[in-house]
Image 1 (tube, rainbow, N blue to C red):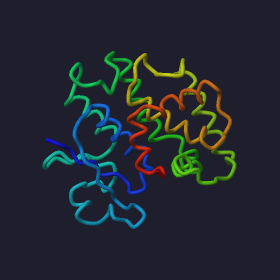
Image 2 (spheres, rainbow, N blue to C red):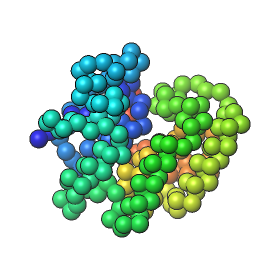
Image 3 (tube, rainbow, N blue to C red):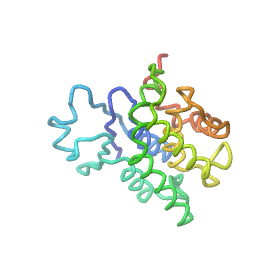
Length: 208
């Protein structure tokens, strides 16, 4: 059975990107449907009738509908496990917990960075003002934590995981806007950016 993945029509949601990458990495057949968040389409039927939280991404598998990107990636990893399919999470129990910690953290914290460096500045290079004091503090926290996890330019846990995408997109809010970021974190973001599954997402909204 193929999946349907509902994403924002601008393809700027980092959470929709995470779900898209997960499906792509697993090699699962899926179609992409868009929801116009700007017009409030997510609050209207039929989308809101199916996705009860009225948010994207939403994964549809037959009559089953799941929202919240980390729930989607965990569902896919459990349903299509290695070795037949690529692992989205580390196999070590503690590393897997740390990967989920990173996912939860970048979704729930660092609000000033997410507000002042929205993903339109990442994907479309929308001009933005210098970071305010609160955002500078949040950015410093992001860099501090990321430096503890990122030991090289490739992966957090020795092999790729979905947490690499989520952390790289958050760091990309600073890197793509020219904010001060240590070189090893810039290299890490650039490395994740070149992953084919991420490039497949970027190709959907980059001019030909």
